[in-house]
Image (cartoon, rainbow, N blue to C red; front, side, top):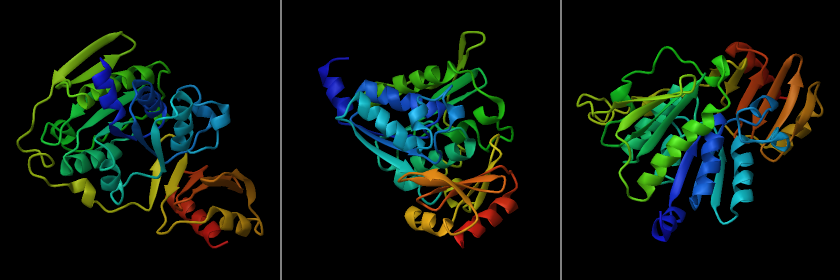
Length: 316
């Protein structure tokens, strides 16, 4: 690639949204490629069940994924500037997040987040790279703010929404899809022309297919500039598919230390915590509370139950 292009990579800033199976592989790849500034965004924490597909180890269990990945990157190259954001990407913060970099990479595992990212990137003239992997197949595509964009391909959020959590994922797939995303990222950041196709990979058949993407002149996002997903009403509760978990989003942040003091005087069982979050148990439910006030209520897919439990500890 040459010193000139390598220096150019070191002076670029990339945003990675999602630090799970796909995202953690992308993050490690960005570090090894010599990207000088990386913003990591994820809402979740590392769990033991992640170790088979994520780039984490046992010492990372209980840490927010973005913070754990930041540490991994520092081990590879301490000169890289890394910002770890522990947050749920939603309509209130997505625009500020994508504007932090020159390019956005997709490490998410849900289509709602991708439609949000697409609208924000089109609105702010930002290229982004889509990546998806589930079961034993995946796909990658570069989307441009002036089209084609994600909504040229999918005008609406697909109703069939399989994720790695609901149907599983082949452990060798995330590194493969991550490598494809990274290859396109390097092209864009060094001034080379990226692929114009959506590329599909099938690990079972060891085969590649692709379709040429074309701008839809009737696209609501890149042609009409109607950013539907940036205007959608924020959800207070969200069922996380395949996890038997509900995310509860509050209207304010919390002080973890003060919350722990309050809960020590209640009937809950405190399981532990760190600078970013704390875990405690109420009956058969395990609750993880983050600094921004979000909670993951594990042990139920009932949003009403999750909200009631949240209000219980919030007023403890």
